[in-house]
Each structure stands twice: as C-alpha cells, then as structure tokens.
Length: 308
Image (cartoon, rainbow, N blue to C red; front, side, top):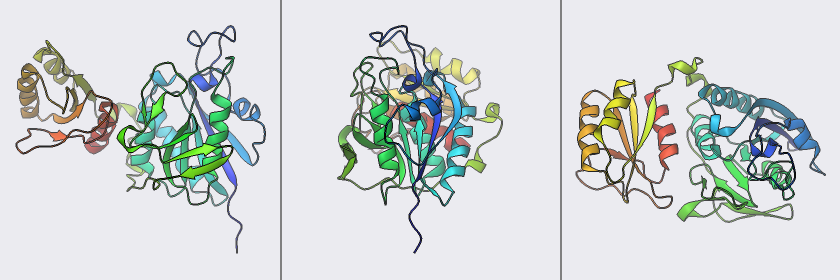
C-alpha cells in the first residue's frame, strides 16, 4: 500500500499577507505584495514538506485575468502530482472570494486547493498571516479534503459561500446563511458540512490572450439609477451585465428599460442582489436569470465563464 502524499505546495500571489508598513502599528498604510512567499513559509514554525512558488506579486485589488489563468495552470499542475496532498494559495483579501470561485469553476479539484490571506500586513503587531497560513496547510493535508476552500480566522469556507464582510477586522470572512464547512482548532480540523464539489471547465478552455476574455461588468441598482450607465457599458463592448439589485434583485425602472435594450443587442444579463446575505429567489415572469446565492462579484465570474 502506498503512503499518502504529504507535500503541500504554497503558491504566492502577493496581497496583505505579504505586505509591509513603516511601523508595527500601521494596519492600513502598508504596501501589499512585498514579501516573497518563501519568506512567508519560513516565518511559520513547524511547516514541513512545503514547496513555495511565486506566481504573482500584486495587491489583489489589481488582480487580472492573465494572473487568474496563470494561477489556475500552476494549481492544476501541482494538484496533478502524485506526491502532492494539496495546494495553498496566499492571496489578498480584496478579491480572494472571486479568485476562489474562478478556481472552483475551472478546476473543481479532487484534492484541497486552499486560499488564505491576512487582514494585517506581515509587519503588524497583530499579524494574522502566519496563523492563517498554518491553518491552510493543515486543511491542505487533511485526508479526504477536496475542492476550493478559503481558510481565514480559523474558519474553513467553501468557494461558493465565501465572502468578505468587513473592511478592517481580522474576522472579516463568513459563509452567509450556509455557515463554515469546518473550523481549525489547535492544528485539528472539526468539520460539519460536506466538502465542495463540481464539474471543472478546465484551464485549456481559457483563452491565453487575456484580451480575448468577454467583457462583463457589474451595475448596481439604486435610487436615481440612470439608463445611460447601462447603455454606455454596452457601447464600450460589454457582452454581459450583472445587476446588483436591491432586495430580491429588484431593479430601478430606468435600468429595466435599458437592460431590455441591451438584451436586444445580444448582451447577456444576470440578476443578483447587493445585500451580502441570502439569495435571489426566482419568480414566474422574471425577465432575467437569477444568480441564486452568488454575490455580484462571483456572478460576474460565472457569466464571464459562461460566455467563454
């Protein structure tokens, strides 16, 4: 009988977890993506059988489609190795949930692919990066774990439910109504829900040229919303629009009329809600498909991949 794989590959993409500030009490004036992933790994005691690879070094607010494709390709490569138990990605928290959903839809891996990050830079007095990285590696080595996961603040979230809910606190992520899949407590996993699963699209389906990816934009419905916003996006080449509607995905009357015009021009429309919990409940007579429980940002990823 073969021994189970134990190697965990940590792929670095930058973010706050790799950020530095001028002094230890500065938690907001830092520069993201300054510390190499190998240094992040070396700073955490007791991590063994770890490989580190730098895929990108950026602030996640500036994440690109090209970086997404490269990251997906490197994840697929390492997950396909027999000696690898799982892959951990260090990532900025601003777009971590979008990257998680993208990787889930493209790869839906049978091994754990764990995203983690930090709300405090590496130089902070209360840096949360080392513990998050340790917990992420713990999950990546857990027998039977699978799918794309987010591990932050001791909680394990599935890619679909994961969402950032606070701009500053260390406990900035949750899973909405579903709740976390598990908790990591003193290096042990306590799981209460099933691991995520799905059908992978495959990296090979993604255009190598980032400019060939379909343009999908998000429009928010609000008091005084204008049709001109939708029409301008269509004129600028948008092939898809995600509407972050009020309440149960409801839309301002001016937006509705503009979206009908956009739809007549061949633009795909997906309706989500700007609330950060719950789901859009579909009803008979809906003009546009509902995004269910996907946030507007994840709904944009979903529509973009659909158009691909």
